[in-house]
Length: 120
Image (tube, rainbow, N blue to C red; front, top):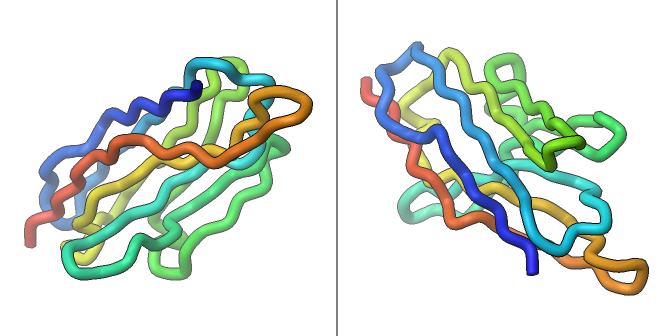
């Protein structure tokens, strides 16, 4: 099995910054894409940012220029640096990883979620 453990959420004022971290552990042969999704109350889960094992990134339009995703392949860890936070960024943020568990099996895995609250 694969576990994703997130940290770094919390309460911050508008304009502030937070850094989320997510470490993957368990039966990992290779991790392909890692990233972050979020879900606000009453809304569907949406992509925030993802990064491939080669370092290619993709961001939601709403966070471009404010959020930066990065990863440490040696530590199986992905980070999300969030700056210029807005109240509309308030959501539960979920870590995501597409993991090759063996040469014959791969699957998507999710963290338990971490709350980010931005006050106005």
